[in-house]
Length: 611
Image 1 (cartoon, rainbow, N blue to C red):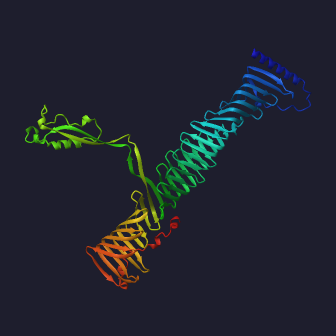
Image 2: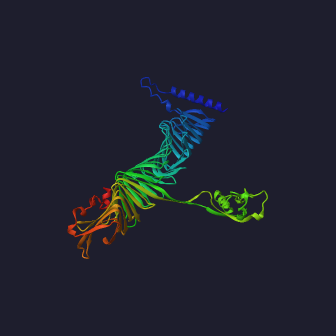
Image 3: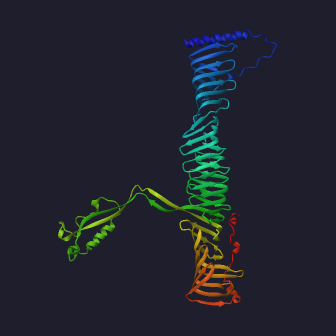
């Protein structure tokens, strides 16, 4: 019956159209009207019921009820009911709406108004758009069928796999699967969360592009950036405009950063700054490789490291600075000590003496000792801790007169679950090529050095020089022991040479195969030279007038100073020496062989290290 009514309606509609055409004025002498664009026509597919209503302005509406379906080109419309304005080529759809655009875009909602001439759709209430890759849901959506662009202005959500992105406003380009989001943009993923004000995102590549301040939090570290991109599928990122990466102990920033989230590896360029807040270390350079997971970095192009302390921070510069973390101590959690005791029978010592059956057997105490030390230290049932009921030298029947009862004790350490309570770690670093060190109390230069916070020793290699106040120390290799970053002891091996300037013209000197120096408040208070040692020291009276110069040779020479003035000298083994008037010190004694006063190379201020 419904089909019959539809057929009758279409028949009447066709006849009416023909009558209308027949009533048109004669236009033989006028130009023919422009042909209609049939691609813009919205055609009927089906409906359970169809009727017409005429309005006062001569507009006729077609009303389709019950599983109504229309199409325009490759775009299909479906809903509970449809009202079509034939003259204006507009349709209005109500209830359970479905749009299938070229079988690639599918949209649903509860209300739709569609303008066939411009191919613009406006949807409301429970709107959902999907392209097979991502799904957009919102309460209001504007969709351009021509360009396949959808946009919302009152909160929307896009779900792409495990990622969910929400924003107040957004555009979705279905052809390219690009999305543009603005105002309160948030992305939630099992591996991270993201918050920003403006975001570009591609659902295919899962690449997010940033154009405004953005925060990315993966639960372990936080990234702040306002420029660049993040490949969320592969974990690759490139950030600009001074991004930062930080966690509980690290802060990394630079003009530009490339970063791999999975490995933690990155490269930073342009005013790179690395801070280890736990270890009190800051590094600055023009560029650096780093590993945020392993907490390592290799800085180049004028790097400077600052080791913070209360009053006298230490500055280190070189061509390249490398730093990492080393494990110092591992603490085991839930460690239990079990002491197990059990009484066992063993042969009496006198029963083994003179017994031919025990020939070659050790005494009972040795048997017990051997058995106990050979047992593995593991937890075992109490029975397994007993000695055998019958020892090798015993007869089948146990003779209690030949045995004695003793107590065996085993101490067993049991580790429950193998859990770690705490891991202590310290930072180490390497500076190589043209290394320079500056603090108020100590300065140094060398080709390369190594320092570890675990022992606070600076190891200087290849042409090292250390200055402390008026003292200069050189040698093939120097170990400088520090405490709170202040010098405590210096060890010099091979070609060891200590020089301190006295007045304007004189130099106190000490050399040997090795030198040990001991500091107090930044000044050397005791210095020792060993092996072919030589010393030259200028003596002064209470008025600081020079009274002579003491030259000596020995296997071991000790100098003791107080307030930078010599208090005592001791020479040990094969001692030779002479006291010279100040003006009569021989030329070859005034400056020992290989004498070099390197004050010009000494860093004078911390600013020099940044040049």
